[in-house]
Image (cartoon, rainbow, N blue to C red):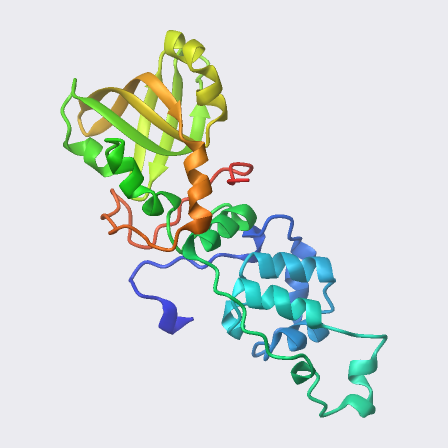
Length: 269
């Protein structure tokens, strides 16, 4: 992995991040891995994990260290065959069981598809942020990035959008507080009761939300006081056909390899 780390800040994701993956299966991998695995078949035979568990790993893009993309790993899993202990019998020693399947050139998944699958199975992606594919569309709607928020003064009107990370109503407060994220950072939003009642379905149900309102910027703490909210979740459907990331903007107040986790259940589909 050392050659894949391109900054002084790096985070290694554990198997516990994979949706539905058990600690028992993780420990089984740990106990038999030794100096590593040579192929998907080697991994299967040594771990003796079930096809369902292997599929979870493949869907989470966990076999990259074996030189397999997500799609290639899923394809090779379908080719695995084992009856009883036949792979361990002398008859099969030295047999090239992996080459018995014809080589197939699988189409490459577009980067947008990869990010969707990452969120579906890991609730995050280290490949790209979903909104980095939609920035031109957001620009056309005059939606500024979260990073730009820090440059605006109190009272300025703004329109900002992001994936909703947090919705909360503290016990002593009447307003709803939302935290949204785009590829540059986060935006904090205050939704007063009257606005909440008008846009309840958007506040509670939208995964990608646009907020218009006035900026409140005091002592470096920035909020948007919402007066209108729009559900932009349908834009996420464009990701599956996206392969071009718009020119990246510097992340706001975050290390270069910081990973922000979507709350469980907030994946795209």
